[in-house]
Amino acid sequence: MKKKTTRSPGAVTETFKVAEHGLEPILGAAYLLTDRAYARVDGDRAKSLTVTLVCKAPGAAALKALREAFELELATQKVRWAMAKNNVGVREYVARQAVLFASGHALAPAPQAAPNAQAAPAAEPLSADQQAEIDRLIAEVETEIKELKNRPAGADPDNVKATWEEKHGEAS
Amino acid sequence: MSLLTEVDALPAPRADRVAPHRYRVVAGRVLAVSEPGHWAFLSAPEYREYLAGLPDAHPRFDELRVKGFLAQYLDFDRLAADAMEGSLLSWEGSHRLVLTLARGRARMSPDTLREAVDFAFTIPGPAVCLELVAADPEAVWPLARFAAEYAARRSEWNGRRSRLWLRTPALPPARRADEYARVGLGLALVRDAAAAPGLGVAAARFSAAAAERAAPASRLVLTWSPKARSAPIWASALRAAGFGSALVSPEAPTTLAQVPAFAAFYAAFLDAAVSDGPPLREEWAAAALRRLPPEGGRPREERGGPLPGVDVSGELCAAPDGTLFASERGAASPDAQGGIGALGALGTTAWEELAAKEGVRALLAAAEGDHHPLCSQCAYKPACTVAPSRHLAAQGTYWGNLPLSPACGAQMAALDALFARLADDSLRESLLGWADSWSLL
Image (cartoon, rainbow over the protein chains, first blue to last red):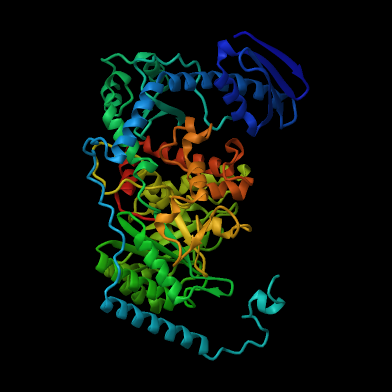
């Protein structure tokens, strides 16, 4: 791996040729390590990029761990991006077909599981009888709420049951 | 360590042999997950062989072919159908409507509540799910009863199933147990994991009454905190009270530093839930598993929707005054009223209008995994969604910065615990059974 590493206190700086490592793996590895380092990327994204990672944790051990993690993550990102790029055509086809299936312009294969339950139609307007029943229910509820409010309260000499707003006034 | 983990010395993947997938190291093995969410555990040498091009005679060949990991045997139309079923293309409507019956001195009126139930029945989907929220269940009992009775009538008139829960931190009086069951109202009791369970005879009354009348079963909403009591204590308390499930949400950790302790609690709870004893389901895990395609031809009535709490697609929320918000967490944020999460009002805003709102589109885009550098490479992408409102609360932006996100860290840790147990032959069937049983959150 052709890279140039410079050491400065608390930071790892490495320069990579984009054609060799890939733009996305370099940026991806730097992004993923932002939980433990401040990442800065300079350079020409068509030619070479310099990644500077300033370690958030102090000490030589933390810096060493950061350097090792970055190298490992860069290798991992290369594999992940290689898989993604290898399958661009597959994913484009799948996305296109999924949209066609969803819009009804193509027939989806039968589901492996039991068919999904049909989405129910929107609610229909209530009939007069149904409306009357609901009005009766609401009247019952309002009566019950009124009864709850009118119940004599138990003694509360210390005003324990008052809300914060009742004690201190409504917040502006 | 990187949130995505790594495996040493991987060969370059063969373009003609390796189908699109993502990988992660879990429990010492490589978890490979296909685009729609079929999964397989491979040893590191097996995974290297797979990337280099698995020979036909390999012992894992048939399994990986059936699950769609081999590029040369891909069933493209099946893959597209799975992708459609697991994406927003198949999304019919918000999974549940959260109704805040009371907040401070504000109370929802019966008319507003009726409008809320009416609105819920206009949301397409296989069933209507309402979650009523109140700190004092007795103070809102008339409203809760009305909501349950009205929803039952609408179910009968419209031919749609409905389920209602009242989520509250206070256990209602035991004398209410039969009434809750009679009107079909389930109890979702909220408890801080650091507190005493407080699930005694009264709680058991609610479970028994629900079972007798086939009403929604009681469940616990367990909020983890750093001083949480041990998970087995909670599992025992739940079983003793006859509760069939608990929701241990990864929403609880507020910093990345808290994630390891949460992960340990969550893993211990999973172990306690699948151990010998009456069935006990963890609801967040069940929701995540339901998002994946069923394994081995298992039948499932509905493919699960978004995880609980995900703005718009997972839930909507109505405040006591009838204002409609993209989520309960979004409704509680300080700038909720003027933010993009304020969607309108019950009685004036129709369900069909929501799709045209820029705020709705922004939230749906922010929740889409393919739009995030970390999510798009994560093995858990088919199962996971971090709610944009959670990013907003923790990091000040709906998009979030995932390497630093406690939400991402916590959900990833929870899924690590779940999949580590899926790798265990003795636990797998119990866990997959959670996904099979019908649960709406």
